[in-house]
Image (cartoon, rainbow, N blue to C red; front, side, top):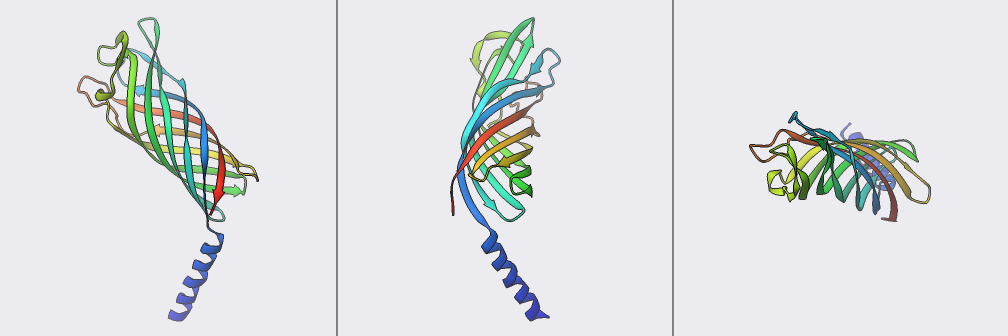
Length: 198
């Protein structure tokens, strides 16, 4: 019995090693993001942005694991006191998703993401709740954000990848006692290309 188990382990290891494949590439696309803010004095909507970066993928037959590192410009549109305002936030985001392949070209995705805030500017004062000249409010928000991605992807035989994801922020990013609870949300539409496999 012990010998059988050892033999099965070696067979499984051999299958994994022959079927597993690393690959890396670049990706870029559009963001449509907003902030969920519990302040009761303004309406937050989705605003366009972009993201760009690279990915590393470890792929088995039906399942693969993808790590991205992307620069993301996101934020929100804001309606307050009859004015159309906006918040612009810049993050370095690192999502890790598990992809399940229904067929070789189509997959669904789920996984966590951590983001690192580099800059946040707005022409809306988040504490006073009124329009204001554009200011840098980076220090009023936490440097890290955490949440989950869910999405789907398609890949062509020549390595072109199209992905759509929805990011749901799970942590309150405000870091000032005067700020209301604030969480990020982001719809991401990207196109990527596998540069090489190894």
